[in-house]
Length: 247
Image 1 (cartoon, rainbow, N blue to C red):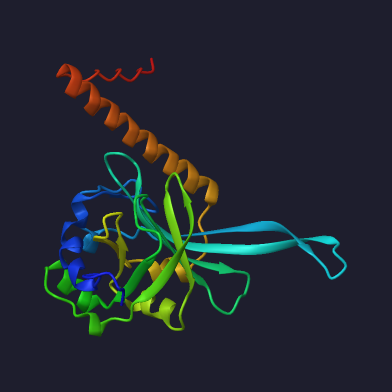
Image 2 (cartoon, rainbow, N blue to C red):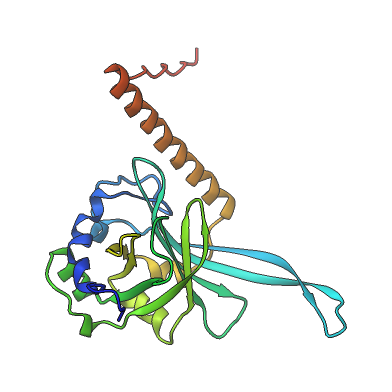
């Protein structure tokens, strides 16, 4: 484990039970109500694929265009009040590479050198965690990820997926992610695996429709945040315009 004291998955027991209060799903189930807890939510996993053109130099230094097929089986959870990403996880497959990569994004403000740890919980372990019952670290197979990129939305950590990880995710109950904040305290980010197998094995969804749905969700969150701010300042909200009735 880590040299940092207390960085164990035992701390994550209460995190799953509280996840329903932390945010909303930001992927396939945009139109679903966000009040359900993670263990009862409809799947937020989606598969997104695209062709990417890259430049690669040959032995003589001449550049050639290369097309790569990149697929992400992706989950993200958004803060229902701000629209910021609470956590996202993805399995990335490039063409027919032997092994995919596990990618995890957490919010800014985490300690960079320790990286991120993740562990797949079986359905039985996930059910125990949701009831605040202990899951011993010896029952788990933690994976260490190092941060590769930080941007305004958060910091992404990545690692080549260990053998058997995807299969474990297909049959598991959830993926528990741990990061250390700037004060060195562990923060747990539960990611339910409901629907992961169907998304990973299925066809990709339309990326444009996905982008539009996500944009609508973000607009709705921003509008609600605006209304909350106005109510705090004035004690009332701006009345919404009545829809125009067709004659």
